[in-house]
Image (cartoon, rainbow, N blue to C red; front, side, top):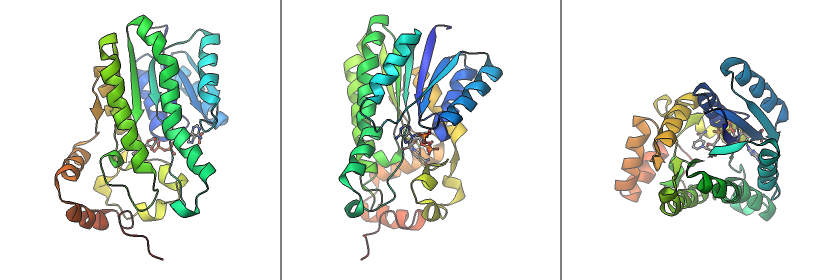
Length: 268
Ligand SMILES: NC(=O)c1ccc[n+]([C@@H]2O[C@H](COP(=O)([O-])OP(=O)(O)OC[C@H]3O[C@@H](n4cnc5c(N)ncnc54)[C@H](OP(=O)(O)O)[C@@H]3O)[C@@H](O)[C@H]2O)c1
């Protein structure tokens, strides 16, 4: 396993950091990437010490169109063969749709969508050559739900990513490549704080809040088994099942109770 590398985007905190830990524990060498170089350096040293695997990092902003190629060139120049590609980096925009600039929407779509497509496009040819490769797209339960009234494009881009995940499987399973959409529900990370909705999300009942390490473990296990979609934890599997079968008015009522503010019409 020594020459195999896993690339994890958004590994400076939260789910990405835990996925990196989980993979290192299983003996995978790692390339970490995110914007905060100090966090990447810290994690790199920790993983090398704890798990005796090879770890390197490249700091870059995935809202920059040049970043996916920069990451690929970095891996090529160092001779790292990416056998596992984990597309995890993400955030949500804290302002309403009408008050968010088009530039910020484009950056958002680039980080959560276009960079995922670009990285897959760049790394897949070598996986095809090697007849093996695994991709993970960290999506969300939001991919299955109606779009919420806050963070307008978040749900739609995650739904798009799930469809892209399906397309990767249809096109590349026969070539030894599988893609896994990891769809967590509420996970305790820096995400809600960074996205400006921590106050609203504080009222979500405790039984719905799951740890990033649990999400990472279920996600990595599913990816290594080649599962197409992983909804971690029984609780959120039930939620997704209900989202798919209950009428919209019941969904609106329940989400009003469990996550107030998310599905209500905007008030002037
Ligand atoms: N937390 C939840 O409840 C939840 C639920 C469902 C799905 N998710 C998804 O899980 C993924 C990880 O989120 P998280 O909960 O772990 O949040 P988090 O703790 O805030 O981590 C987000 C990661 O993405 C990186 N990132 C953000 N913007 C970036 C950019 N422009 N360029 C490069 N990297 C960037 C951050 O690193 P830097 O700031 O250092 O760049 C960080 O490492 C996201 O895709 C999110 O949509 C989260």
